[in-house]
Amino acid sequence: MTTTSRTRTLLGAAAGLLSAAAGVGASLVVSAFVRGAPTPITAVGSRVIDATPAAVKDWAIRTLGTNDKLFLLTGIFIVLALLACATGIVAWRSRPLALGITAALGLVGLAAAYADRTQLAGPGRLAPALAALVVSVGMLAWFTAGWGGAPARTGDDDLTRPAELANHPMADHPMAQSGARAENPAPAGFDRRAFLAAAVVSGAVATTGFGAARLFDDAGTRSRSATKLPPPTSAAAPLAAGASLSVAGITPYLTANKDFYRIDTALTVPQVPAAKWTLKIHGLVDNEIELTFADLLDMPLIERRVTLTCVSNEVGGEYIGNATWLGVRIADLLEQVGVSPDADAVKSTAVDGFTVGTPLAALTDGRDAMIAIGMNGEPLPLDHGFPARMVVPGLYGYVSATKWLVDMEVTRFEDFTAYWTDRGWAAEAPIKTMSRIDVPAGFAEVQAGKVAVAGVAWAQHTGIKAVEVRVNDGDWQPARLATEDTVDTWRQWVYAWDATPGSHTLQVRATDTTGYTQTGRQVPPAPDGATGWHSVEVAVA
Ligand SMILES: Nc1nc2c(c(=O)[nH]1)N[C@H]1C(S)=C(S)[C@@H](COP(=O)(O)O)O[C@H]1N2
Ligand SMILES: [Mo]
Image (cartoon, rainbow, N blue to C red; front, side, top):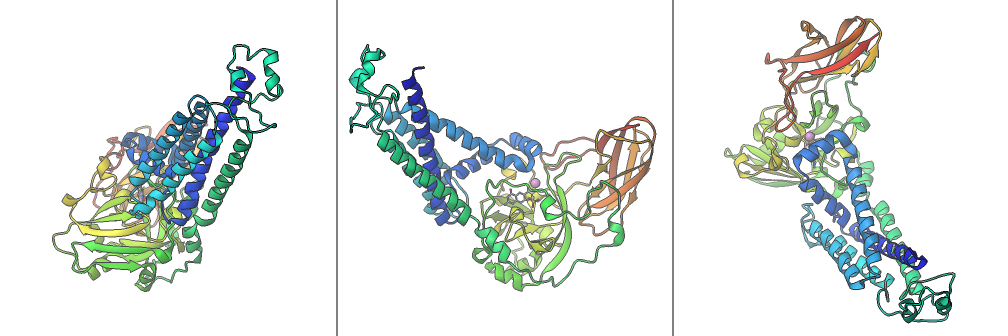
């Protein structure tokens, strides 16, 4: 590679990268002003999430967990950066082609924004992507002014080497360099002043954009800090002393907010200020209503402990947590609107367009289904749905636990589908009775003698009656259960095992209060929840 072609590659890559950075920066500035409008990056990311086959999504949830979003965003940035560099380099060959590619990338962002289902359904959602398109094409045009065409000599300090010389068969002859500075071989058509000016401007736009994103994209965070929750009208019963076992390593009975699993399709956490939030309840009702956050605070509030569970859990999975929720009974709201006898479902929608279908019966049969605004004594964390979400004891999250809730439509299952049912998951999904061994951990080494085998078991809204453990396919032995807190929460258990040296397999199974004992048949999470016994291998020394 000659010095000149290396310089061209570097300049091209820099021009492409900086133009793209300016485009992204411009989109961030615009989206800071148009509340809720996605940047082309997040819009493309969201389309990728929506289009990802269910199997890949399940794999991503399993292997990347909550990092799946960071992974996707990083991937998009890397792909965009590579494309931008390549496009800048192409500009030396054909400037129109490079500008065309940049415009095409911008159109991809625009199309992704067009397909966005955020609540901001108006044309405003296109504004950030449009800004990205215009700015990135404009900046690249500026950077590459004169590239690939005839050179323009603009002054004595111009680094341009006359094209006649550059293209001359003798161009590489030492004597041929005399027309340019030999120590600084700038490519034909390169205009240093224009390039530097463009670099300064694109740097400024990009910096402003990322700064604006930091400064203005926290409306939800600020609103949450300012939110004061009233005390419950109906407080949770005090936690019985025996509900929490003191076994080293067992999962804490109550899950702290920071440890609570997070599963959702939101690439960036929706920032919804409580003051701008409303919840519309409509559909097959006598009188539809639209509630504000202040309206919710004025209603009777219940406080209840409920264990949430994700259907994506493999047997022994981690996507389960137990929190104290504060909220308004959904049954109260449904009574207020007057539900038609034809209805059998509620379709709820999040601010980002995610949808959930919940059986009407689960919302009206007396269980503590609520629109939650508090979690463990605080306003909902943003990750968990601030300002408001649904919590329904006994149902997997994807059919009940809508975060960033903005709309509830009383309807019929035959008349709609929801986000995950569109992807092959079951329309109705009660949580399956399940148990998990927390200690000893899989492949742990323990000392021979008395070893506490312990964990949790759950059958939300039914209740756990018994837990049994067996060692190496021996007889099932009863475990000791912690005091039952509520039927809507998980239950800890412990089994005192007489461990003998060697390697052993421990298994657990639970029986719920209907008398059903967990089947040993292993089925995967799709379409309505995994079954099978959790088992761990341990080595006893
Ligand atoms: N808006 C929105 N709400 C959502 C989801 C989502 O993707 N978007 N995922 C659901 C699923 S699959 C589960 S298991 C629970 C998880 O709630 P958590 O993240 O607070 O634990 O949220 C539910 N609510
Ligand atoms: Mo889930």
